[in-house]
Each structure stands twice: as C-alpha cells, then as structure tokens.
Image (tube, rainbow, N blue to C red; front, side, top):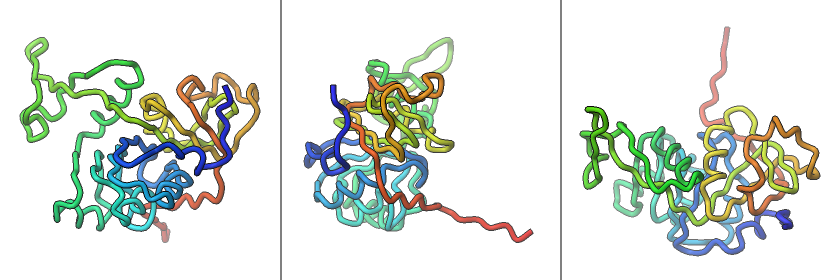
Length: 231
C-alpha cells in the first residue's frame, strides 16, 4: 500500500463540506500547518473541528474560523482566539467545550474501537445535561461517546513511508491519540525517511493507523505566548 502523497492538496483532496476532522497539536505546537492551509485554500465549509484548542486569530484553526469554514468546534481550551469568541457569542459557531482529559480519552476510545467511556469529569455540572450517569462502587460517572471523525490530521517530527511516526516534545500530547482515532488519518512530517530507517523503539504511532503521509514545507512553528526573561 503506497501511503506517500505529493503534498497537502492531494492529502486532503476528498475532505468535503460537513466532514468531522480531528486536528492534532497543543496550542500552536505540532499543528498540521500545511494541511490547514490547504483546507483554507480549498474553501471547504460546515466543518466540525475537534482539537485541543482553536488556534489564534491569524494562525492554525483560526484561519479556518476567519473564513467561516467551521460550523462546530469541539475543544478543551479556546482562550487565545478573539474571532472564535465573537462567533460563539453571536451564535454563528456551535461550541462544545469539554474537559481536556475527556477529549483525550474519547480519542483513545475511538482508536481502540470502544463505543464509549465513563468518566467522573463533569458529573453534576452543565456538561452532564442530557447524558447518562452510572454509579460504580458508590461513585457517579458520566458516559461520553468515542469520537466519530471522518479524518484525523496530525503533524509529526519524523515519519517513514509506511506511516510510522515520531513526535517531538509537546507535539506528542494530542497527535498520537488523534492519529489513532480517524477513519482516515493524514500525517504531515518534517522529515520523511524510507521504511526501516526509524528505530522501532522510538516510534510513537505505528504505521497501521496512518493512511496518507507527506513531507511538509515552510513550518512557521509560531509561539503562542512568548515569554522573555530579563534576568
């Protein structure tokens, strides 16, 4: 099976209006910059985006929000995006804010083929409204469904032509979980190497989860909140 594609345009060619997409990264770290740019260029609308965050106004998922390409955002942290806030408060954007651990575990459940999980996070709050609550050993747990995403788009430091991936530092937070969870997983990597070049013990995501892979270009790797010490 040839998983290597020429670039982001080919990688996302069959993503269509109304699809649900998992987007890897943590803040602005480890986000699939090339694929996001191609989604913007293609002009796909009515997307449901599942991501740890919503980017910033002019970078990351913020670029999709600027162009009104996102119908619904499912995230755990959205505090850096003024356009996101404006669309949410005006009712233009549907928003599902969920605990970060629940976000991660719903990805994991999808990857493992589990239909749902039980978690204590959100019990007794607005998060639990309309959801099943069960008691195990005297403690209430909220049932949350595994994500059902058409695509997962992730960004790795290094990958091989069979789709095996290695993530660097903070980019390892959500990318490996989301790579497991999509019906079709697209990986963009900073360096693409021949199969067999990676140390198997260093691989974070086995290639069985990855359907398309390409070597990306011109990564900005922007810092969300730059802090400089004057000491």
